[in-house]
Length: 78
Image 1 (tube, rainbow, N blue to C red):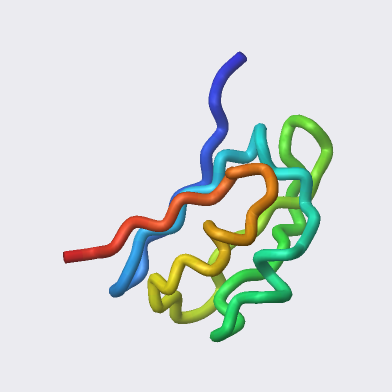
Image 2 (cartoon, one colour; image 1 turned 135 degrees about the horizontal axis):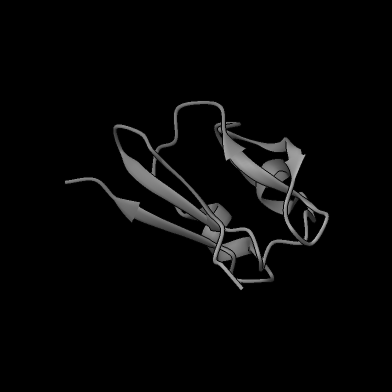
């Protein structure tokens, strides 16, 4: 099975979502303190909407910490 990964880089961080782990629970979207995430209109191979960056990510890692499926990794930009 091919790995499908959504990655986007913003000035402060790179956010990577491993779509095969994400179940579209929406916790990351609801708890992002700056509203930088929303669920995509597209579906993953498993049939779930996955989060995508829509705003200015600050690299705070709340989404990574709260994700129950360990589907999100936030890397700081240096």
